[in-house]
Image 1 (cartoon, rainbow, N blue to C red):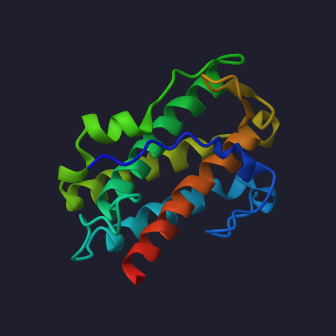
Image 2 (cartoon, rainbow, N blue to C red):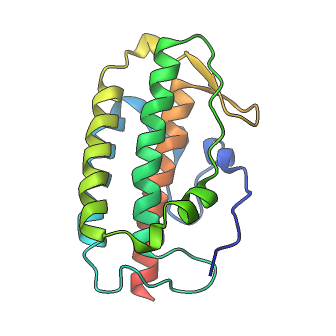
Length: 176
């Protein structure tokens, strides 16, 4: 059964701590993005090895496998978007429908071991790209398809909430 699409504007995480996962974007240093991306990517190997990896805890939440596929694709998407921001002036990002991608790419049917490998590769590539960003580049801008403007600074902070939050989601799924 498909999950009701998430239509929230999650940019609020740039303004206040996440009451669920505890991530505080305001205090996150984008220079720490490479290390956190690598650590987060590695965490998925254990999560995707859980015996109930493909089970949804309820009709409103993805399974660990689906969350893992989403995080892999977020890492890939942000690598692309970071490249645009570093190589173009004020690029506009093509829209990405995460819910449609989950259905089209059959997240729930993917092999968790392969997904774990892919997350680690995508994390390594994104971390390497962020490691090349200089503080003087933090002000470079990019625009989401809905018009929301990001600097590389806010882009890194916004990005990091997503995989951190989804590790929290999966840990909650497994503890209930």
